[in-house]
Image 1: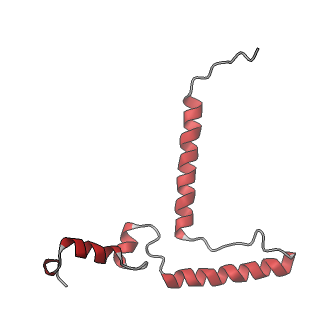
Image 2: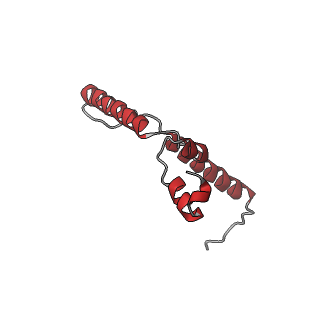
Length: 100
């Protein structure tokens, strides 16, 4: 299909419906290369980890999970928000308040 064969809006719709794992999605989002097969493998490993923890401790709490790409992205966002908040607090001029 050539771009001249379809209206721009239709070409955009086609691009936006590309599946995870496609070259385009992998290029525009950090977790785009993470396809459905990778997610299924990670879920299997997660279940095995939960079973191991359950048999070892009687609980699944604290069992390890496979690191998904978006988990790292979320941690980076949280870390950046925390750095900004700490910087703002450190740069703020504080004054004593009389409680009396």
